[in-house]
Length: 78
Length: 557
Image (cartoon, rainbow over all chains, first blue to last red; front, top):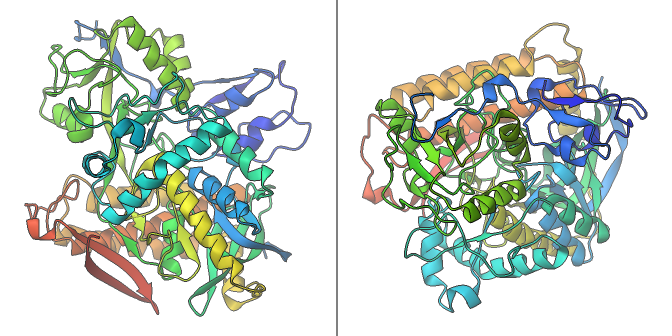
């Protein structure tokens, strides 16, 4: 469920729902804290995080998108 | 029945998609004194593949490159964007590109963030450098502001689903307002339409995470609608048979590779490509630009995985790279790396080749950005005979804006397209999708399409028999989708129509891939396993006329 809204910090301005390129929040009524209605449609673009005036949103990157890496010089996975 | 707004929007120029091409077209058209409307599926402040930024702007700057444009034309055509250009378009683009760079810089998109015109990355040792490094994080906000300042009407959350023609000329368009839970059909009366819907994602299963449809490098909301709309309206498309694949960090697909400053290495720490051993911001490692399948090949040969190693990059260049990733719009990845403790100074990140998508494959345009349908223009990633990504969108968007505005000036009055049988038929079709109580959702249809595309028009192998079978299956799927698809609100109806557009693009891919009887690039035909020099400068075009598909071959200009 990529965007996570901190309900304590959210001022329900609706900017995140308005600007999300993928419309993951769906329709949000004025004054309501947005709900992530279509979480699997998140593109991880971070627009909601960047544009939230209250810094109330964080992005949880789903497991299928986890970055994979190794220590340089020791790529056996250690 | 679906709600229909009976009050049409009237606008001299309608722009479909408010990305880079659409906004630049809007700005230039509005400067020419005509009324302009952008209909955007999301919100122009943050929509499309350039939503949160970009890294490079391909251009020709005489004071940097010298007065001779020819070596730059050659370099662009040999670069990762250059394979399928009409040279006439490359030249016109390069001639105008610096003017667009200066526009952007004057509006507040920093085109020389380090004080000089800096061409770093995407470059070969000893060759001209054509990729200007810029700081694109605010590009959508700045361009939206410039458009609005000129009186451009921006209709957000209004995807355009079809255009309306009369006697082969544009007279209007149909939009679907998705602002509210209940969708509303809107009619637009216009004199010129510019299609600028970007690249085409969601055609093939995501290569890294097949179950995660929106984990794509380019915007997953860009679904080939421009190509599909154009095709339905009789426009000619070109180069649809050539798959294109982007590359970047494995599994986290919303990224690229050109901003990274490191060396591609095998698991033993040995460089994979021949170009650099000590990475610098000027060169980076361009191996993946020329050896597009490097990560896949390494993996399949068992010699992988392939990593990007930045540990020999200087601290100064690492900082430059992190700055670049931020302005490219990769803040989600940077935050993630911070949280997970992934540090490029000590870790090598695995890279991969992402699934095929369409970019620089699609609508054929002339030097004025016009298609063969009167009043229909196109610019940006959905154009098939030219590609230069952000810079191409900016420059040909600008050209399209001028052409569309000048045409509109010569037409008096609007024609009434709404209420026609075509519009009523579309509205009934949308209603049927909304009214069904059972049936497949868009996601089912999209996944079914993706598996047919992967198996029968994929990048592993294509052949006459596979393509022919795949086309049959695709048409069977389309018939099922058109008659059984179900949606329950504006959002899912929008996704449903996107999926139908994707199926349309899929059909064009099958038909043109059958026609190209050779192996070229990622179009790999097992029954024609060689690249035929006689077909080198031949483009395959496709269009529909009176319900009949016409496929032709033409010489590259």
